[in-house]
Image (cartoon, rainbow, N blue to C red; front, top):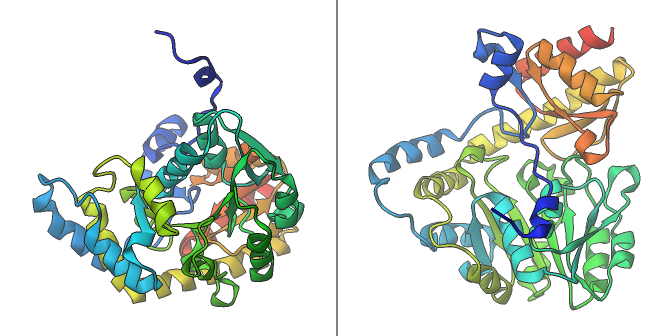
Length: 363
């Protein structure tokens, strides 16, 4: 067996480990006692309305899903104030990132991204032999002016995660508008807004106004994995100009979004109460960690997402010590941030459990 030469050089995404495996390795009998706050999931779980919709859909699982997600597209288009042909659904945002790289990248082209931004952009670009230009991020935040300067004649994509994973930082509306105004016509700007729904209202950027205005070079990615609590179903969506969406549709496999995911997403859009409770949990949790960690002399990066980046010193060591105390967080050395861990905001009880474990280590 001989793969293509460049395949052997590809990096593999480092996923979080299953709870069962962590429990087995550390000798824990009670898996339920392990707190996993490593993957930016919604610790409230799915919407009750989404759970009901999933249960009702079970008897139809012998049928193929709606390949065009017709009803979900109609519903979401009405909610967002766009046309249905401006939406495309994927198996999470990750598949949509792969679609974009498939359509626009190849040998001799490149993607521009922040040096501390979501790793899947780098991996997806490599899948299609595209180069990656990484731009420094002062104070862990995308520098859109520097990203503009990094664009070359071979650039086809620029990725801006807003808020950014794993740092939680965001860029302002003014910076976004200025960036889009100066964006060269041969480049597509991806605004990855996976955490949009949990952002404070006054911070939410309005990138959709550029798409509604007919800009073909701007595309927004969002997901049902975070605020809506449907990470296990893998469903995300892209919003863009109809011509751009149609290009992505050409590389989409039939039935890429399963029927249960579509049913759950439809119901989740109607559950305003669950979304409000999720936001309140996140806002309170961020305030809690900023206040309590500051008392311990631990610095945090201001976050607009449902997680917080924490400077502990030797993040991998802290990660391993927390595991021994039945708490799983995310070490940040794969992102070039070896002094940091990333903590998903949980319920008040979960946050207290993590804080107690961290206190036990640092004190």
